Image: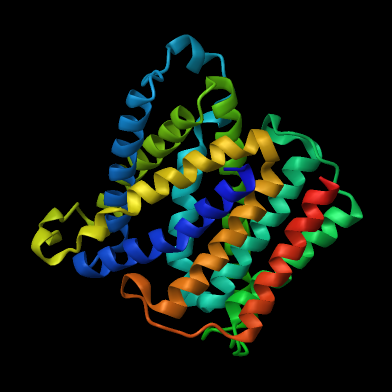
Length: 308
């Protein structure tokens, strides 16, 4: 299976994970507790994967102390991105909550590639590469907006709306940074699975500290197994596979192309999820405009790949 196909499958799993975690959050009446459960189960899955693939489960102090401080921020940045998306939705609406972080991901990934930040492969930002990135952003807009003209969210004024747009942009940039960091960590460890485990474990620790502050305790009494479907426990596994795939692909494809190809899989998966109403999602038929958006996405990927 080629790297591009692996990236598409990883992206395809993201909307499934979102639907699973969203369903779990509704059943236990807490999005943050659902994220904590998902991250914890994902960490356990990755730890078992590392053990059974004969990789080292722990890191030596010598290795930790001789690496740059930012190498350990991947999991924290992932939690920031997750939390930002939860906060942004009521302020920006569904279209801009997807579009602004995607724009941030594209901008940051192109900068990372152009300057070789975080020891990533260097790919100069040519005009054709930039055009490909802009086509991808346009494709995301068409795919997410569908056949309806997006409305402004009920925010007090344009200045307030621009503030939340900026938060979405920064959240996307943090997500792209996480991808680059995990890719470099995987290179150093000679193990993408171990890098994914480190990232997920850090994110899990952050959530275990964050949840009681946000919700005044853990409230695990809300979790009633009899009321939860078996597939509600799969979010962490899918998330672990996603982080593992990113750590594997970045050294091969570069940060920019990895993010873009995963994005194509994510948008395609979202449209299929909506069209068929999988995982208790509200069924919404795919429109011609959304199909056009996916075609634009693929065109942008091809352009980036050809000049990359």
